[in-house]
Image (cartoon, rainbow, N blue to C red; front, side, top):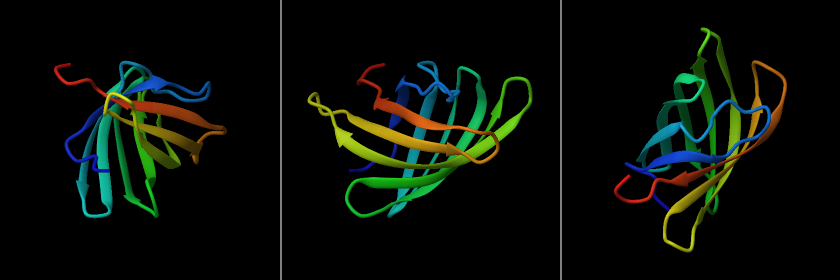
Length: 114
């Protein structure tokens, strides 16, 4: 699996999450290192830095500035799978470090041409 140059959107969001369908995550990948910037919905700007683990597992830390000026972050572990149409899906299990809560978000690769 390779996320380099891929853009994803949040197709499903946990109740304590702040991303939504308007959030766009733009990935870059160098070897086992993965990083991304994201924005949309209530997130003005966010960053994640992580790396691939055994299999199709990705772990990362994230930090984001939200509307209203607050800055929050946490850590995630993700499974990456391929959808029947060939696009990739990232299933994120996140835990906030700066506020209480954890949950699952799902990000899908944007269809070609969007």
